Image 1 (cartoon, rainbow, N blue to C red):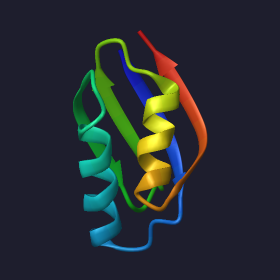
Image 2: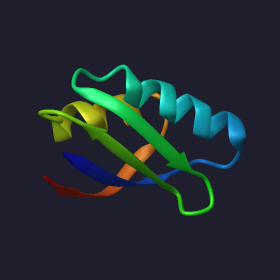
Image 3: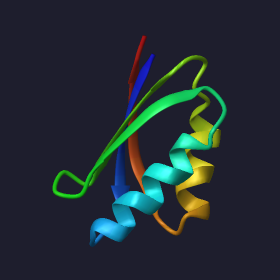
Image 4: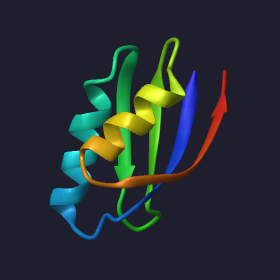
Length: 71
């Protein structure tokens, strides 16, 4: 399963690492790739929970403005 998140508030490499770390701590996440230029994150894993992913990003200090998923 993959989820693409559009994230607002990232402005530097530190932001990218902070969001990546937060997403990788969510249960079920196997891999998270965060792109500063595209303001997005691609998350891969099993049984990904949209609410948990959004919560992790919010707790890290950023905002998910959109989420798209596919199995």
